[in-house]
Image (tube, rainbow, N blue to C red; front, side):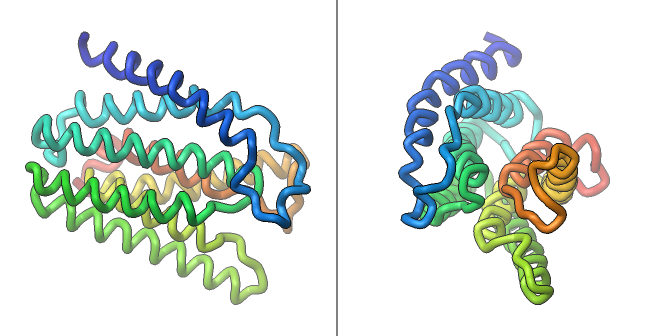
Length: 239
C-alpha cells in the first residue's frame, strides 16, 4: 500500500476501535455530582469518525511527509503511538468539554505524562535532543501564554479560559514543538482563530449570549491539528 492508502486504512480501523469509546462517553461517568442533572448530551456518533480522521492524518504527516524531526522508522513508530494515544484523549476531552465545559484532570494528567514519556523515547531512539528541547519550550510557551490570558480574564472578573485549557495548551504546544516552530505558532494562533469563529457561530445561532461561556478546548485542538498539517507550508520562514 502506498502513502495514500495506508492512512486511510489506519483511519478506518481506528474509527471502528473508537465505537466503544463513544459508547463509554455516552454514559457520562466523568460528570461530577453537581453535574449529573445536566441535560443528556446525546449520542456521540461523531467520536469514531473524528478519531479515525485525526489518526489517519497523523499517520500521513509522520510517515509520508519528509521532516528532519522524524529521521527514521523507529522515531516515526514512537511518535505515531504517542500521538495516537494523545489524539484519543483529546477526542474524549473534546466530548467532555462540549458537555460540561470542563477538561477532567483524570484524563489530562495521564495525557501529559504519556506525551512527555513518548517524546523522550523518540529522542532516545534517534530523534536527538533538539526536537525534545523544542517540544519542552513549545509546551512552556503555549502553557505560559494561556495562563497569562486566564489570569488577565480572572482579574477582570471572569474566567474565559480555565486551568484545563492551560494544561491542554501545554500538551498541544509540546506535541507541536517536536515538529517545529511553524507548527507551534500556527497551531496556537489557529486555536484562537477557530475559537473566535466557533464563538461567533454560537452567537449568531443564539446558542450562547455575549457573556456566556462555551467549550474552548475543541477549537484549540482543531487549531493545533491545522498547525501540524499546514505550519511548514504557511510559515516556512520559521523552520
